[in-house]
Each structure stands twice: as C-alpha cells, then as structure tokens.
Image (cartoon, rainbow, N blue to C red; front, side, top):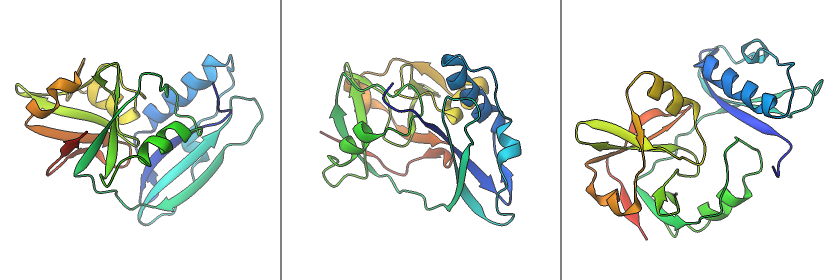
Length: 197
C-alpha cells in the first residue's frame, strides 16, 4: 500500500454524523488489516458545528497512539451530467487511502466532462468520488467489483435497495437510469448522464 494514512468522509447535518456504524466498520477493517486491535469510537471524536450541512474529513493512520485528524468543510455538491470513460487495468484503490494521485490523474483527463468513469478489464467500476448504479429490469444494480466498497453502497446493499453484478462497458448505453452514491449525496439519480469515450 502506497499510503500510510486513510480517511473517512462523513456527512454531518446540524451536528449529527450520519451512518456512523458503516464508517466505524470500514475504519476498523483497515486497522485490522495492519494487525491493530486498538480502535477508537469515531463518533466520539466528532464535535461538528451544530447548524448546517458539513463534510467531515477524518484522517487516521494504521499506527497505535497516533491522533485522528478531523476537519469540517462546508459542502458544495459536484453536478455530474457527463462521464468520460477511462480504461485502466492496473488501478487499485481498495482502501480509502489519502494517496489519490491515480484518481486525480484520471480526473484531469476528463476532457470537459464532469467526471470520469473508470473501466477495469472492460468492467465498470467507479467515478473518482462515487460508486455508481444503473436501473435495469426493475432493479438498481451496482458493479460487483468497484474500486472502493463505499459505505453508502454497503448500506444500500444491506437494505436490499441495490444488488451487485458484473457490468460490462458494452452495456452502458442500455440502462434507462444512472445514479451516483457516496456518503455526501447518498443515492442521487442523475437527470441525465452522457458517457463519452
């Protein structure tokens, strides 16, 4: 792993951090992968502003006794109506690492589109900031092998609102609806979405 630090993006509304069980679970999973058993309760670390919508960024390292760094940012949603397809079979972003140089490089190649959609081994994965889902045959489907298993994706799978399956790049234009999902936007159905090569 290239990075020595990891982060969680947490939606905070009027002082309340949302869906913390899923953020806690992912945080613990990362630390456990490094053999660290001592974990903090993330919700107890958050002292958010009591009024308004904020993006809480919580950065931690897989080392004992290193403080968690927490910052709060006013949130401005990124509008997405077009996605540039980026083909790359080597990209690996299985953990929410602060090392995002590969993703940032892909984003810089969006050629006027709002974001990119990363295709790995001819299968759809993620955009640079969100998991993705498509409406097909009466249900919402999401890639079985995303770059990152997001907390919102995991929650919606648990709730039965989406199902996972392999999605080939050749299927993209056959879907009637597209949605993006992450901690800040939850599940947002796009009004329109163009896929550009």
